[in-house]
Image 1 (cartoon, rainbow, N blue to C red):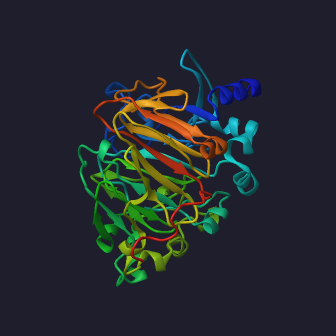
Image 2 (tube, rainbow, N blue to C red):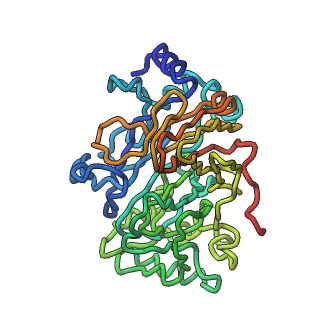
Image 3 (cartoon, rainbow, N blue to C red):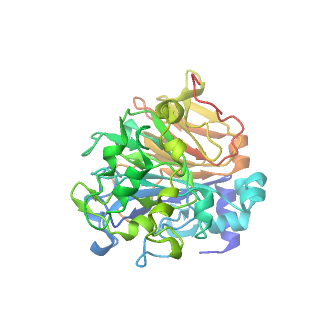
Length: 403
């Protein structure tokens, strides 16, 4: 649906807040971790040739880069018209219709829309060692760079899968020629590229910032991942948990004349960041309290970068708060039940594919500044939500504590 009158009516009825439809995404690689609250029968809802559903995207105005078989709107967020009908319209269309009424003047002037999205990624096995292109390298293939952030919510990680650690970068003493030698045998033998990397055990309730150009192999932990509007990567590891990855995944984001060029593929790495001897000090993100009272506590969980930010908000049982922010945001409830503005709000327990939910919302800049009333109607359980922002929240911390 693209009816501007209906979009505006839903916007006004929601008092500047949209309720979003769940956007599940399959991947051709990996095994589903089955922590997305999706019904067990629905993890192959896109068909066996598409792979299992391992992601759920939030506040997305872009489609997943998912191969020739992907639907044109795969991964894009849709707005629910009401609880009584399955009619919906895309968040992308809503941004076009409402513009700065929805995302604010600054984001419209700079980016002509909403510049980020977030996701849960959920794999039983660890992901391959890969990087996301810098803005300069991505521009060579007509795409955007992809800085991203991780946060590991306790509510969604009752188990850690096969590997509770993430590799970042390379050991500072690694010679660049060693890297080139490993990736040059991508089509012939196991690159064993993580031999040259560094692993960090996952600590629930904390996160990391991963700049574009930094190679990483994420743990098999359900991860909340705010990121820039891009879905590009270059894969340096060809065998993970016995699964073999095709050679095109190494250079599919290179200009055609550079595909197979090991020196060019190596140049996609930001070598200084990858070999930072104080990597944890610079990129680990412990939570930072933003505000608190007897009714709630709110923490910054993504911060100290120029692209994206996120908070975790906990409202205590039986309490109601008005929470204000200086920028538009999307959010997802991960524990409890209550109300969010004019809407019911509840963390999903079990969703069928194609079913509406009332756990995900998008808040306009004006509504965020005015404040959203959030009520926890449980007498015993906290109400917890994660909030993702673009680069314009005026209060986001610019530095990591202790640095």
